[in-house]
Amino acid sequence: MLTVRAPATSANLGSGFDVFGAALSRPADVLRVSEADRTTISVTGAGSQYIPEDPEKNTVGAVAEALDAPAHIEIDKGVRPASGLGSSAASAAAAAVGLNELYERGYSRAELVPMAAEGEAVVSGDAHADNVAPAILGGFTIATPEGVTRVDAGVPLVACLPEVVVSTRDARRVVPAGATIEEVVETVGCAATLVVGMCRDDPALVGRGMADAVVTPARAALIEGYETVHTAALGAGATGVTVSGAGPTVVAACRESDRRAVAATMVEAFADAGVESRAYQTRVGRGATVH
Ligand code: HSE
Image 1 (cartoon, helix red, strand yellow):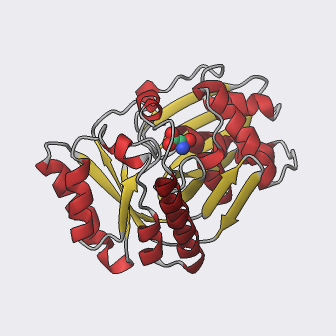
Image 2: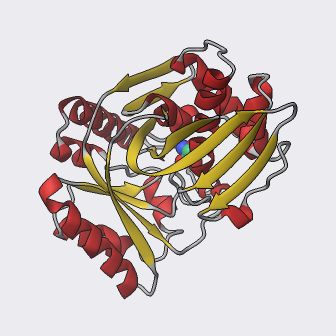
């Protein structure tokens, strides 16, 4: 039997829609995998009541199939589903890393990324690697159809998860069909700034590079209290604030010394808007680890 911990992730980071992703030091899913003749799944933890245990309908079942690695898989969810924190990607990543090791399949971490992404696609219909890449590889990742580039980073972040529901379908439906050349120029500038910020572990550059005038404003409108939280977080020292993945989590970059205050301020601001939330004080962290 093996135990694998795979982290929550934050995709997009504003200017990198469907491309950027970062592993978070917390929260995380923990999976226990043991060899079996056929795959069975049990799920406990955050939001487990919404997650199917049928291997045909669960992302880890699809990963076990792809690796030809039937197993009993116990999933302890630390990452709530539909949070914008890569919940299904965390489970898929943990299953890919754990089953690869359990059955000594010998795939590299990079080779496991498309397998976990395909596993996710079987269940969610969409094979974006922007969450599974950082969940497997750790750090900050740039996922394109040509492959994944990663850098080690440790920028402090706050991920504030409100008790509101945003369907991924709605969040994708509101993405504008096009952008003006001015918006493209601005986005390229921000994305480049964010990448340099990650390479230098510089929260000021990362925060500045999170700005995005194309996708984020449309999605922010789906999150009650977003504008209040955005303004309050910047006032408390955040260097940048945006929607995490498809939402509803709001993610802020900041200096370590400001992180506690930023977290408390974001929770208060959501409360002012009548929305309960919890804030994870986190940072860009490691990928899946086997224990
Ligand atoms: N990048 C996706 C989106 C989420 O923002 O819809 C994660 O795949």
